[in-house]
Amino acid sequence: MLPEHIAIIMDGNGRWARKRNLPRVMGHRSGVKNVDLIVKECSDKGVKALTLYTFSSENWKRSKEEVSALMKLLERSLREKEDLLREGNMRFNVIGRIDAFPESLQAAIKKITKSTSNNSGMVLTLALNYGARREILDAVKKVCEKNKNGQLEVSSLKEDDFEKFLYTEGLPPLDFIIRTSGEMRLSNFLLWQSAYAEIYVTKTLWPDFNEEDLRKALEEYSLRERRFGE
Image (cartoon, rainbow, N blue to C red; front, side):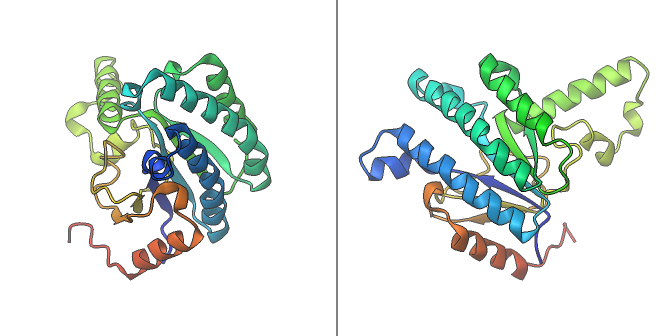
């Protein structure tokens, strides 16, 4: 039994670097390289959607040097991955507020999104400047605006209706969350969508998370009985 939609909290880059007496940015660089491996593996296995927690709205609190390095690393990575996604028939997607990013990074995001928009394979979504509480609040504001304009009756609003206002509208329901590095929390990631998602935590740090680790995670998922509150 394969999950249609997998989300990964890619944690542990900093600790990976610290264990090797390297600068934190080296951990991020190693983590970015690992993204290609896991993206290709998920696509090859037939996963329909993969969402990666890449840069949270709280990550701005890190040092200016680290944030600047992350922005440059992300932009370079996107430019390098465009051919990989096109050749793999994968569609690129972003959730979060990218308007806070440098213009060159925004341009790179828009370019790869457009160039892969007609692909029919796995949807790769990066959560960028993303926070789940903010996502829900933004959805509420949209609902209020629709109600104010007479386009929506709040009293008749159902959960399925509300989900259409979330950033993830159009993606399959979330089935499986993987978190690396052993931390036992969601860290403000896909809070609405994770209501009945299965969660898998591994102590493996993200740069070390390989195909075998993914296989183990998927194997455990296949053994679980999903009840959806029943």
